[in-house]
Image 1 (tube, one colour):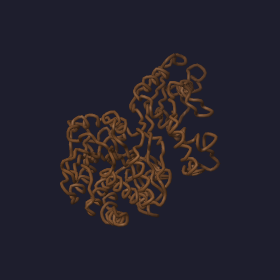
Image 2: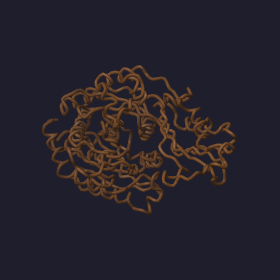
Image 3: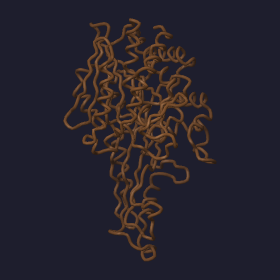
Length: 474
């Protein structure tokens, strides 16, 4: 493959076609069903599906078929098939992405907004462009770049789902429904992950799982004057503090139950140390800390292990609390907290959720009514050993398009699809990568896609697809 021709083709495709489409895609508030239960009635998901489907179906890729698949009232998927250049081969590559989005989130810069696409400093701002609306466009462009040069490739299947941000609960049904059409992939390419910097190719080799839900403590049937009730009626807020103290050390943030930990493989420790050495203090400097705030843990190696292999608790929402301006002198009847517990990659998410519910609900203080309602439980993923051909291809691609070698990283987020595929196709190799680098802030305010980095990543995908076809399978 001619690297210069590949990059030139991809750059032009992004500038003339992909970026304008992503601008329109960002305008669509197609929130994932978990955040928009009435998604079907609102129609935004259908708008996003139509935009991406229309673009994909117009691409002049040899033999490609494109369709929207719907199973009952489930969220739709876009399913595409591109035949391989060898009609006698049953080898297949599966490329994956999603088109649903996280909710708006507060705190966007004055000139930015979630559904307002803005391009500045070579970055495309707005919700969903990087996470990961670009994936469908990049997948087809990687394949087309090879066909432009007459380079052989295996049969490719592209699957774009619509509920990844809600835990991909619809996806198993689609995988089962399409299993015969998918075949047995020898390579899976996922463009929904992150990068440690914008200077080289990053391969994700592990993903954490998640146990999330709402913890509620109820003490009264209605609010009561705080002067009359305090000292007699227990505070629902304090009850939740006591209950969650079973789960985490409030001083260090360390999750306490040993049942929520797993052994960290030595190879992952070595890769984490290499990442810490390569990034240095950029490991924590990438975060928008308020003035004076210091990072957790004693060094960058431990911080990266905390983020990739150890359980960690976040409080992502609260209920029962009036706004400051409306907060009267009332002892409130209940408090709710939304908990998001990230889990080690090799811990079963369902089992962890059952354990979490039992831990939080047992023996409630003052016999308050305490209930934990699970809404997401997902297992993480730990990649199989990287095949020599894939490592060589990634290293070569990273040098060709970035000028530096590939790096391996554990990612702190969850992509439920990876665990499913690991179960469905245990012999597959995985190229899990993405554009979510420092400050790109997926799920938060000011999310952006780093355009020059994305273009180079797209070229790396082309090379891996080409090398896959020429690999030594012996």
